[in-house]
Amino acid sequence: MTIFDTMQASTPVIPEKYTQMNADELTYRICEIKEKMGPTLFLPGHHYQKDEVIQFADARGDSLQLAQLSASHHEAEFIIFCGVHFMAETADILTRNDQKVYLPDLRAGCSMADMATFNQTEKAWSRLMDVFDDSIVPLTYVNSTAAIKSFVGKHGGATVTSSNAEKMIKWAFNQKERILFLPDQHLGRNTAYNLGIPLEQMAVWDPIKEVLIHEKDIKDVKVILWKGHCSVHENFTVSNIHHIRENYPDMKIIVHPECSRDVVSLSDHAGSTNYIIKTIDQAPSGSSWAIGTEMNLVNRIIHQHPDQQIVSLNPNMCPCLTMNRIDLPHLTWSLEAIEEGKPVNQIEVDRAIAVDAKKALERMLERT
Ligand code: 13P
Ligand code: SF4
Image (cartoon, rainbow, N blue to C red):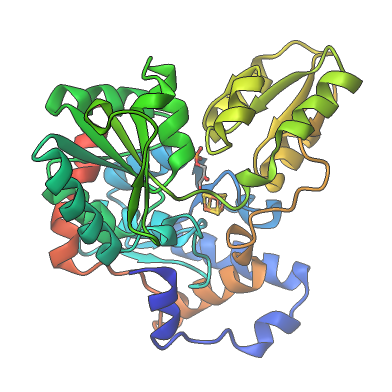
């Protein structure tokens, strides 16, 4: 289900009382309910969540770590996912049927995940089969709907995250001659390039125009990239890099691989949110960094390392707006609704979709 479909369905509106409570009152209620519910409740949180929310996370991580946690966490009956819609869907697919997953605000979607719909993917697949026969294995970034994961699982493919994309692309090339990589063209291009595949052997499938864009002989194409991107990371540009290089020659640049190929190729390091956090944690005091990723995380890293000079690669960046929809009022609402026995905003993936989506996720989890 795309976030648009979810919002079309009856979406309960947050009661006004939560938007009128102050931060202290909300914090008090969250602590109180968490303590009362103990291990029956579990709150995983993605690194991009704002501080006011992530402080309550029982575990925080990048997308891979959160998927692994979902697969291994068997105690909690109620899982309140502090992240975006596709992450909560993944948690629902990987947890037992009697564990319930909730997203505090159903509007917390991911614009990239919505750039590949099931119908578009079916059409693209049939056109690509006409051109390349049965020589393609599909891979999807976890930032995709459960329906896309299901499609990929059904066709022998797997999910990937920014932490294991290299490993999964290598795995895919052991299955078939070509890969279709959905929905983030940049993660696909950056990773395939690092594995030695030249840009001329990569084509782009445009799901709107329904055309395959390629430079050289179509027979040489090894990687078909879906024309999708992250609207947050596309705001890091080559001119941001030039600005840092000219004004801070000693500064290292580290970016997320959802940034464009040009930005990644001019940076010093690229990797997942967990990789970025670890690299700065391990850097010596006095080192200086420009970071190209979501602002809530960049601000947290700056705060945690006062001994280093750290800036955002783009000084005008905003946080990921959909991640930011999870806030204290919505978290309190979720918790109180569960406490009152009338939970709201449950994420429940259709079982028919979940079966094949789980295959795609498990193929990834078995290899990482
Ligand atoms: P990772 O935490 O896996 O690096 O993912 C970043 C992201 O954009 C999640 O939406
Ligand atoms: Fe989606 Fe980009 Fe936000 Fe991650 S940062 S949730 S990929 S829009």
